Image 1 (cartoon, rainbow, N blue to C red):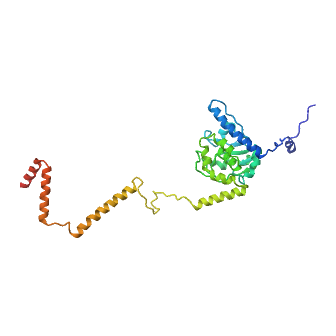
Image 2 (cartoon, rainbow, N blue to C red; image 1 turned 135 degrees about the vertical axis):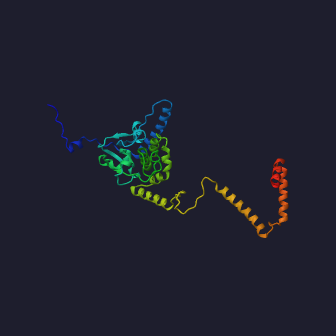
Length: 314
C-alpha cells in the first residue's frame, strides 16, 4: 500500500514550513558586505574587459512588481534583470523588512539584524496609482516607512518622498549602517551617486539614530528648520505683487550710468539759463547767423548757394 498523504490543515502546513536559517552576527554580515562591494568593482572591471559580471549580495532583495511603470525606466526591473532582486507573486509572503505605505513605523538602525537575516522587499507601483494598489495582498510581518528624503531619479528628480525602487533599497541600507550595499545598487545607474549627494545630511542624521522614534524626531527637526528659513520665490511677471523689477534684457548698471550722465548734463546747462548768460542781443544773433552761413558756404558746393541766392532774389 502507498504511504498516506498528510492533511492540508494549518497544522500540516506549519509542519512543512522551513526553519529559519541560523542567525549570523552583524560583524560577519558587515564583512560580507565589504567583500560584495570589492567583488562588484572587480566584476565591473572584468565586464569592461569583456568578461562576465555576476555578483551576489549577502542578503535577499525582493519586490512585488505590479506593471505600473515604464519597463525602460523601472529601476526595480533592471535590478531583477541583473539578478540582484527576486520578483514575488502578488499573494506571496516575505519574511524580512517590507517597505510599504501601509507601514506604521520608520526604518531605523534597530532593523539591522532583521535585514541581515531576512532581507528587504519593496513594492514596485506607480505613485499616481496608489489607490489601485492591493497592498493587502502583499503580505509581510515587518512593514516599514522611509523618512523624508528627496528623489534623484530622472522621473521625479527633486520631489520629496517619490523614491524609485533602487533609491528605496539604497536609503534603507544607508539608514541601517550598510552604505556599501547602497553603493553596489546605485552603481548600476548613471544618476545613482546623485541620490547619495542630494540626501547626504539626512541619511547621516537617520543613521545616527537608534530607534524609529528618534528617526521621526530627526525628520521633524529637519522639516522645522527648513520652514524657519524658507527660500522666497519671486515671480518677476506677477504684476499684482507690488514689486518693481528691472528689465532682464537690459543691464542695470549701464542704464543707471546713462541716466546719471543725462542728469549731470542737464544740471550743467540749467545754471546758465537762470543767470542770463545764455541770452544775446539781436545784433549778436545776426553776426552768429552770418558766421554760420559762411561756414556752411565753405563746406557746401558752389552750385547749391547759387540756387539759394536766386530763390532769395525771387
